[in-house]
Image (cartoon, rainbow, N blue to C red):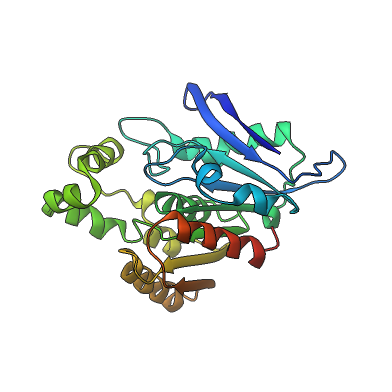
Length: 255
């Protein structure tokens, strides 16, 4: 079953888009796993439905997939904008559990995404590891936020040429005009503070512009004795790759 529409968020104080994908044989007598699937920078709550085979993969599974809309927020509480982190991690789960028969167990709660959504999944899971049992991050951006913000301040034209002028505006809305680094949004800082970790599943294509960052991030996790798995294959930063990553994750964790 596939449902798309809007819900009103008290945190955001507005209507916001949402898509829900469930197994075909949905039953009130069964508690399902829940997976929050986060879109990328240019996406919305329908992107994974439109550009991947997720609805097919979910047909015979035991997981309800929740696809929220977070605009271009990087899933943060923005300085000039909306508190999307609070919405995704606090309000949205309550809304979904009131509608569907969703398990409350940590091991049945998954968060995943690609690109901006991969960063968002790691941000949520590492900020609240007691809430998420599994985190899947595909070709994630912002793995090293402090360095990235510094580079953006020093080389704004390079970022504008590679990712578009709007990206500078996005980061200004999140971090302010000076692009001030915030530890609560930095994955490295969150790893340092965490006492427990979800199962972390990372993937990246070897032809992806974030590939080298992933190798460095995996080395950091290894040195900190953080359990994770990393898969890489010949792929670029596109939905051909994202769809394959989704398929692999669903199979790996029996979603």
